[in-house]
Length: 169
Image (spheres, rainbow, N blue to C red):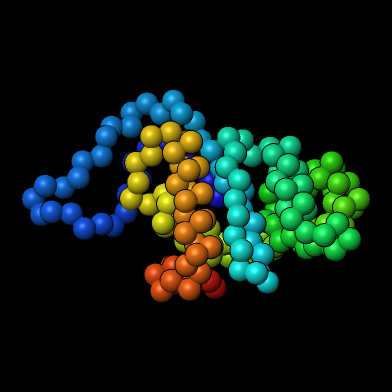
């Protein structure tokens, strides 16, 4: 998920009439962008994310290794990914072959087919929308707080509504 910028993000909220909340100016954005790498276990309804400043193949491989450590090494795991070129580098392919990881790619322009996308939509709704983060560390902390809340409230009506609101064809 990303790129995430350090700027005020629009959203809906309750606000007193005649005194709207003013967003700070964002003429200069020196903080750059960051990304969230997300994984979703469909069997356990478990979501986890890593916050990274870059989206290179080395960060993808680090995230894949973190996923692999969560499961028994003798168990084959299948990961559904979009067709980003950093997912298909030779070091990633070789590592997956050695560690019983099968990469399954969604069709081009069909990321909505990936079950993770509706959970990223909810994470964006609850963490990014209507926020004005101080820095990337603040965004990462808010995302971790959201993930902890989500683990405790998987059946929350508002969460389920946002997850189910993702448009499909």
